[in-house]
Length: 181
Figure (cartoon, rainbow, N blue to C red):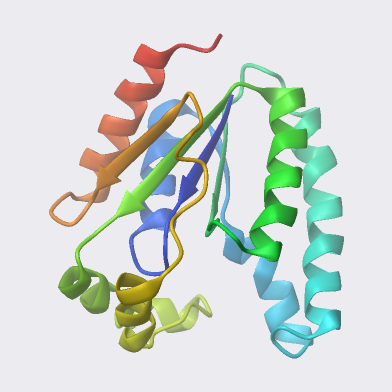
């Protein structure tokens, strides 16, 4: 199976993904594992940046496909409606899901004040993650809707008051109930 943890910066995708990977004995490929190469070596949002991201995905995707089918794979990202970047990511995810399916989409949500608190945490700097609380404010005020809500296997989970292990347990239970078919 392929599980996508989708949410805006600071909602806890990586932390929940780590707890979920441990619970499911899954592999986790966090979006920053891919983007950090581009952040380190190119200008953000330049053509070179997006090429570097595609190149790293080109290395990662065959490795994902080569994993035994019984090994779940968890991806994290920010996929929104009406975004050309998200449309490109959707094609990638659909191709991976066709080989590894089924696809489970989890929208991670949290309220504005908690999102602002999380996005400012010092641990994010070491991981080259955005720390500007105004990013959370903009996302909550006028951010595009998260993609994938119409998928058959889509869970919206408010993680405002949930610790990562509890969120991971809820997701694992949902995946188990939805079944692999």
